[in-house]
Length: 114
Length: 111
Image 1 (spheres, rainbow over the protein chains, first blue to last red):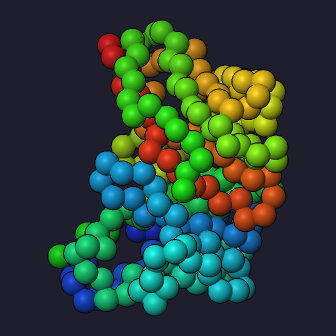
Image 2: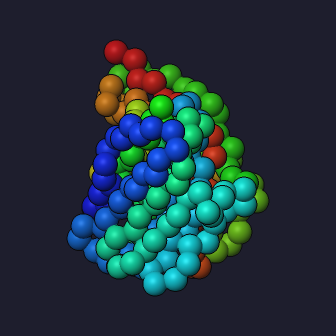
Image 3: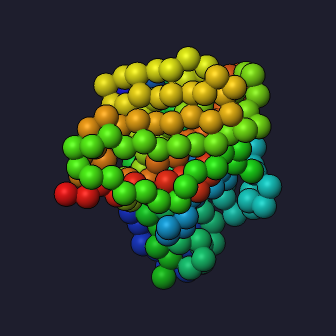
């Protein structure tokens, strides 16, 4: 299947700093990517839909100024967690779909804010 | 909100078939049923999807009831590596294609 790659796989940052997570579609072009977060022993929660060349669409309750999404090309979307705090520590996962069939997910990024 | 209901956990003996049920009683005519699984600390992995007909691939079989209100994912010969959380998702056939995950079923395959 198609490959979606996230970088970094894990990151530790200090409280108050910003962290950028990259999501790349390696062998296909993705006009739309999705960002999820997952807390321990919980399900994935959709944060936002990232559209190439336009503003992201955020789910209700997700702060768009805190979670900045940029989808500058058909193979790259980035999620920046601004002014991170310990409660932002979570597993962040992106996905993209190919030709309207199944979506493919990245391996996830574990963010720990200390 | 997720449109699916799954049992929170199940056990299955290694080598036996694992049958994972999913209820999606409010599914619409243009919505597909998708199954993914998530092994600990990894991204979800696609398994199979279907609209109304039963489907089979190298990983699993998907049985959808005639009224489409429920489905069953079948892993024919479960192995220890199949231990994971299995998610059943309904998704519209057009539009944004976003997935709303429910709570999933935690399948434990026992040696």
